[in-house]
Length: 167
Image 1 (cartoon, helix red, strand yellow):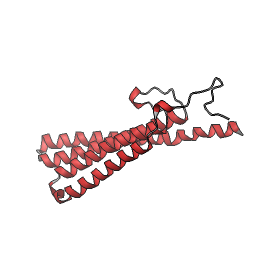
Image 2 (cartoon, rainbow, N blue to C red; image 1 turned 180 degrees about the vertical axis):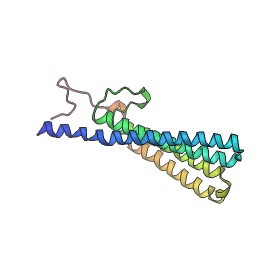
Image 3 (tube, one colour; image 1 turned 45 degrees about the vertical axis):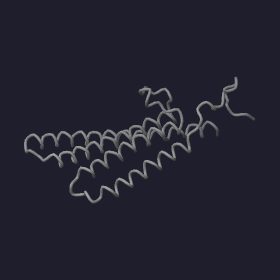
Image 4 (cartoon, one colour; image 1 turned 90 degrees about the vertical axis):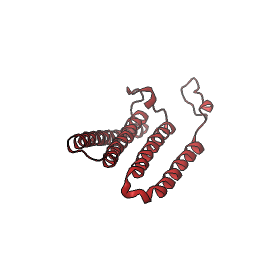
């Protein structure tokens, strides 16, 4: 029974791969969006504000893809294979690591969305409400991250048998 329950962790492969495929899709669409904006600006002389908003929208899709990529790698690393080849900054050792990486990317997305609203002349009246909302969200994420942060120096040490749990 223990072996069967232990094997259920491999179910996480499905959402991990789905998240990575979603990341590839969003990054591709965002990249195509940037190329189309460049073509539009060079050949048809699009104005600066619409070009900026369109580029920021495409970058937003790329950043959302990054979130999905971090989630996919993190889930796979946590549940299936901790030795997957990822850059050191993407290493996930526990759910707190995954949470902090996600919060960082979400804050970047919030910033991109806010700048898009700031630049878009059609939504100038919304700048204050978006700014307050974005600030409140970032402050809430920072407070959540601080409140749930674990002390790394207080990690339990393993006993010679390999178990960190005490009877």
